[in-house]
Image (cartoon, rainbow, N blue to C red):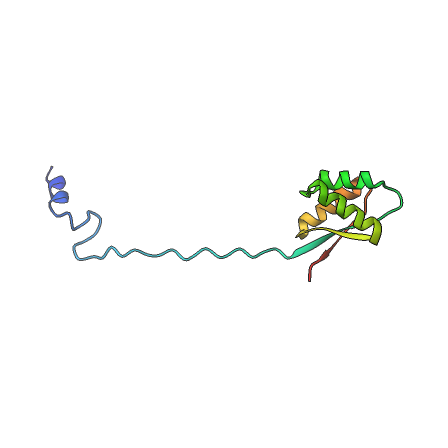
Length: 113
């Protein structure tokens, strides 16, 4: 019981420190800021095999592009030979290329300058 009385007798002196010791707080170092991954372009190429409908439907299926954007990119590739679909990080761009290839469409990736 005396120990309890001693602990509560002097509230300015915590139990685990000797009198006069400081209870300074340390500030944790700021976490490192994450580095952005380098951007890569995903480029759709025209071919003479696939229909415009198949290409637009595949774009809708595999990308976050909306219907109007998918049609626009499809027509651009059809008319000019290639169209920029989107820009993302390398790993995701590689995945897009593989997914489009599985649906027999040609997509290449390249680093953005």
